[in-house]
Length: 301
Image (tube, rainbow, N blue to C red; front, side, top):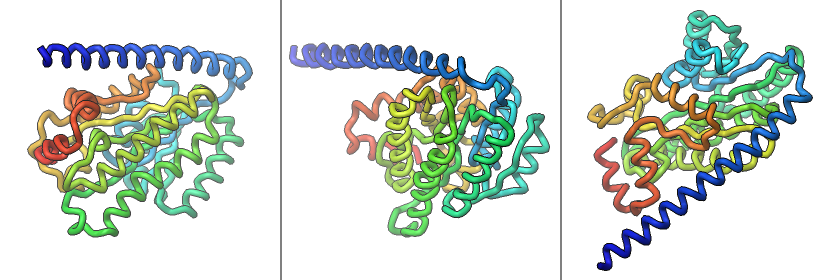
């Protein structure tokens, strides 16, 4: 009897919350479209669309670049690809057919970020470019006990995954006009604490929360922010570098994450969780206590 009432109560709460979320989404999209349409009435139709991709030397970043080149409906005319490894960026540039600027930089370096800001401002003004996409996919992580990894590695993780990402957003978003999109790569690891990936999950929780909040601020300007939270992707360099277990259940492929997240971005979704496991994690992280999730997630790293 009691269980039946509890199920009814929680089921009702869930359904009402889902309906409210759907209504909010519809209102957001209507207002967003109005802002974009008003902006386009006064825009220069001769401008060309620019996409900026960070972390483009490998993994998801590299596949986002290829996706934009292969899918013309996303209307990208030119690219700026960013990472530390210039040779990898040059190799990528040589393999694609869009005009591309290779920009090697360390996003954690404030001086290099300031120089990139000056470069981007000049390029946009001189070439009449419109920033269509910022795809922020640079990041790092390392598996291990926090005290054994040491503060330097954990601070570096926070610096790259949080501070550098926010710095890039500030540089680019201030130059965006209505119709622009920020695709921020976070992770399902940001939904709850994860032992042995403590700094990584904490950094992804930060950028997840930041991007979700930023969306509410920028939608009124006609700029869409989609936060992408994939489950483990097994065909990138990340798992090997992070020393994450290879015994992962239902891992994702990089191209699937890219395709699904870009479709969700075009739909104006606030959150994209490519794959079954990521979607389930997204649901359960709001229903199951962290104490339980911390225990369960040990089997997935």
